Image (tube, rainbow, N blue to C red):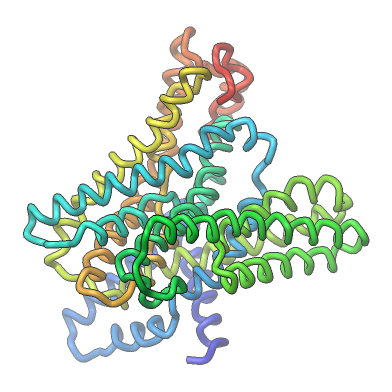
Length: 459
């Protein structure tokens, strides 16, 4: 298939899936697309099983197989999706929870990586699947970061307190970059540098520290420099069409340069997006330009989100799953949730020594920590070893559960916490009566702003 045919197929399927979801399923758009794609994939497999020789599965698998999911996401769509998400995050609110976000995005990711990795190794041994500890850690690294694309799409449908929302959004944007760096380092260790830019040979502490600094700090510095350059260019003119083009050039250019310099592209794009979406929007754009720039990236975000979540469902047709791995895959679902709970609870418990946090914050942060396409792409990028099929199966099990179960029930969790706060006069999340009445009339899952909760501080 040509590139044009592939694009036409994906957008056409996304539009059709969105229509089916809107007309019949009435689920959140991205979740509905995953479910429609999974049902379609299952139907194709069922037809092939019941009526052998139809070649429907082979035809569709060949078409979808021409799409390199890992390259399409990690070297194409991700830059635009991360920039669009970061540009809409309020940097002031992010700064108010900087310690919580920073600890969850670093200590939390590393903690979760080792918990999941250790559990994967132990459960694998118990089930007779001998996976080396380093490869178990690699699975922990690729599944521990919450997916900013999935998380931000859910936050559009569920309203939570602004600072709690800032923690969820900020953490998902930053821990993605950290997770990719940790994943890259572990793959370097597992392969001895084979097939990666490290160049092979022994991998010691000094090499790991250098690689981390190059990826993480280099990505942040590159994003800041590129964001400043775009900012000064946008200040020179007041023409919204050109300024939209400048942001497109910023996104594609900084990500491509980061890949070329072996720095973290996700971190670079997030830093640039935060800067342009806040400082740039305030001081370098007119009101008309702001409207056009943000409308463009909102539309881009919606289109790419639709295609990405559709692909997650359709990849089932081309990914090889082995029944012998289903047991460990199902076991990983509660393991990842427990690891997420611990990774969230430790930083918040440490910060509560000097600051107070919302009751229910740990539960919401745990359940709203969705996994998505980035985890799948990282799993697909692994070298072809005997452990890759198991890692892919485990990844898909966690991702599908995360999107379909957690994504569909996070609003119910928020509503439950609202109800507890509303019924208990002493509850720190007790909402303002007028806000609660308005929320009930609108049928929204709205939690009060933190300014209404008297005994809470900022962490």
